[in-house]
Length: 168
Image (cartoon, rainbow, N blue to C red; front, side, top):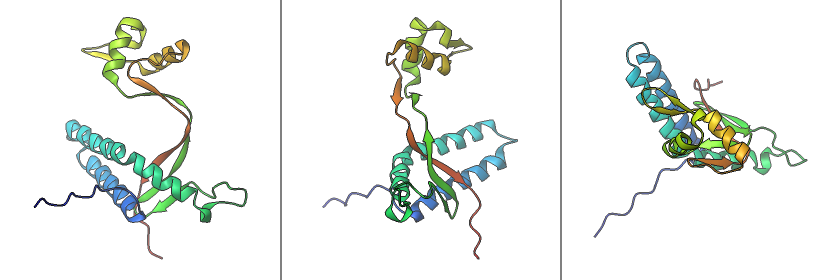
């Protein structure tokens, strides 16, 4: 008899979103504690934060979109009363984002740019990519270049961990 499959953790309630904000605050606090002593530790903490954000971004966006566009949050004309909400460990809301190129595969973009847009490649000890130059090339050519995708503008999640709410 096999064990039942574990249900994947998702952000689908205030408590779970508060958990995520609290985790981000804890990471921020840990970052401050080691800032003077350990650049490597800071990079690890930033990677953990990015991993959390990337892992839960779609869940947070769905949760916040449902809350922003809930009937109880809509004005008579159908527009939201507010797009940012206070939670126990910070604020979360939707922020308008302009459409534009987003780097998804740096290595593919760098490899293509080395042969086609050398001005976008900055040579250091290793190759790096001038993302603005690469995006400008994509925009000017109208081509979808390797490693980037076009994202339509719209609302995207904005998380701002902060101090816990005071009772009273």
